[in-house]
Length: 323
Length: 247
Ligand SMILES: Cc1cc2nc3c(=O)[nH]c(=O)nc-3n(C[C@H](O)[C@H](O)[C@H](O)COP(=O)(O)OP(=O)(O)OC[C@H]3O[C@@H](n4cnc5c(N)ncnc54)[C@H](O)[C@@H]3O)c2cc1C
Ligand SMILES: Nc1ncnc2c1ncn2[C@@H]1O[C@H](COP(=O)(O)O)[C@@H](O)[C@H]1O
Image (cartoon, rainbow over all chains, first blue to last red; front, side, top):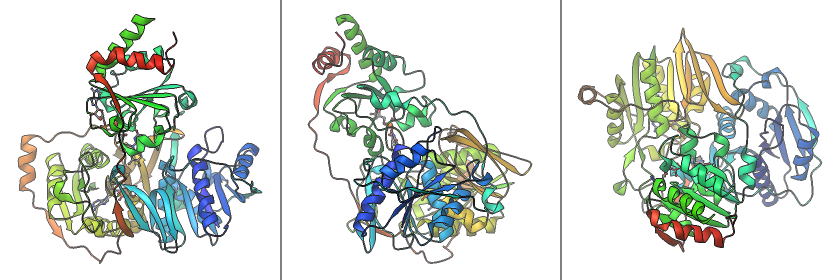
């Protein structure tokens, strides 16, 4: 079987990138003659979650429960996955921070290789995957000769699509013993997550994007005004969230939201492949960038070359003038 | 308290990436080189924690440049495992780091969350299993008091905190601290530090690489609406034309 770690939102739904990973697992299963796809979730799954996983063709939902799983510990999750994986040929997850971490634990414990951020596979015997390296500037074909093959799927590399025929999604609840050593590094406290407002971003008709070019956390006033004038949402690059300029739920890309607005206006965003993964399905892109050779500019439908701190206020003024 | 920080010399991917003829590596002849932001933050955290700080790398002869840069901002010793990093897989690198950590009697090893070139997301975790130590992954702040590491960072359940006893491995994500710039005296001091050069302890098994490829060039049919603030009327014309402007 193929085992997929499925991550859930605070309200218990399967996150989009985990549904993408299951979709990837299904195409692998089809290529491999129909090996069943099982899901591993942490905590008791809701009926809705089970129904979703069934619609994605999952055979069995393994739920890891008990005190060891009450707060996150990467080694404990890996131990739980090892307990249910049986003779599976593949153990995989979405390329999220948790997904990459837990798969690295599984691979280290099993003494096998692990491929992070896989985009596609090109052969089963030998099993060869293509993954992103050098920040997405290059791709690597990598042989995964060990069993289980352990890897993560880059966010938005495939689209999450329910199965043609749903699976039974039988639920098996496990409460495995976890070694004390696997619980030493566990989350001891977590502050309330920032409210996840990415829903409005994902459904917005217009998204104004902001990247490192914004300059600082104070550099967003004009961009927010433009967002307002267009009745849209603000979306940002990972640089912006890593530096703490804006909250994570505003991030667009492989490790953020995927957006498909009528118009995306990325300002001061270079257009790295990981960002592009989240915005490539926008109908129109209007890039504003000082660098005419930035990938975002060359991939855009329209562009303005210039400093966003000059261009955006001028656009705002022109919109107000015409209103 | 002695800390080991692991850094890697990597090509600067903001410059154009060129591959070697055999597709096995990035051709460094045309590239700029750097250390990833995660690792620069790991160095900064080590300096803030204080005490003896050894910076290490497994890399070719030129990687001395990155070791010196780390020495210039406050690391006190350097170990250079001289080898071609392209032929080392993550398990190989973890084994070599473990040998350096054992040998140096370090209590804390800091690494980046992922290397900017190979992006394997796993050397720190494999290292922890080699050493039999706990590992905290992907955190942006780290402090040590009374033999306990407190580390925290953003997670899906909010801002998450871990507390683990030493010895421990921690992998760092950028964003929690601002790496400092080297001072002139710092640079002078760094020049005088003798770098401990070593051979790898074992033959590498390799990264499983078949080959590297460049993504296909995307054809561009961008329409440039103008330059600077003067482009505003053309932009607003477009917004009207696309019907995204409420009139
Ligand atoms: C595994 C992995 C996952 C990732 N996931 C994501 C993700 O989900 N989302 C994401 O965005 N990134 C992601 N990244 C990071 C990605 O590789 C890039 O580093 C990031 O997108 C770059 O952000 P940026 O464009 O804001 O910054 P930069 O690449 O630094 O680009 C800044 C741009 O702004 C322009 N500029 C500068 N000043 C101005 C100005 N005053 N006016 C106008 N233009 C200006 C510059 O010309 C440049 O093009 C990921 C990376 C990895 C390795
Ligand atoms: N050749 C190397 N020398 C020293 N440290 C390394 C090397 N390769 C990886 N690392 C460390 O391991 C981290 C994770 O790398 P990776 O698992 O390859 O993505 C990096 O951020 C570095 O801190």
